[in-house]
Image (cartoon, rainbow, N blue to C red):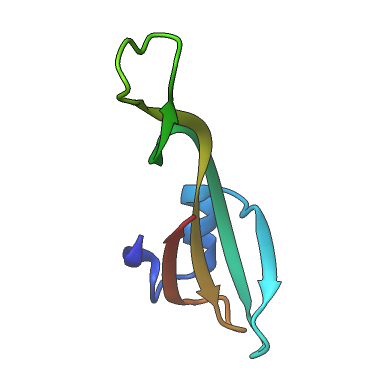
Length: 93
């Protein structure tokens, strides 16, 4: 995506379409954010201890639980007042 830096924003829009949001950058330009969300399953790092039921000794059984989550990827393109992309930033949440 860094290939768009130095290019007109019209090329960015032709390739990726309309951004999900446009924010003013306080320098006369805009920040175009392309946001993608994807569901995933995350393995919980904490161990949950269950005692009793299937336990025939005094030892505890440890279980790792997984939970559904959403990964969000944000690709931000900084467009100056002349319509030229001058910076690219990527982050995942």
